[in-house]
Image (cartoon, rainbow, N blue to C red):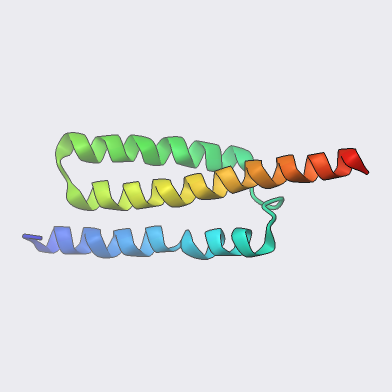
Length: 95
């Protein structure tokens, strides 16, 4: 890191990316994501992917690292939502 803007970017990245960790843990522990909006997380994943591509194109490590980590966390939530909804649907169909 060479400058104050880079330092601020990294701190912002830690805060905004870290905000997803409690949600992932919550969904994982409860084994349910029924209160999670599929549409919102789908749009978020696309947006974060685009930010990641943008960061790569401008060679900005704070943007790249933050969005790569956020993409993993947001995708985890989205995939858990899909997984748990399918599981719940199969359980309700079998009863």
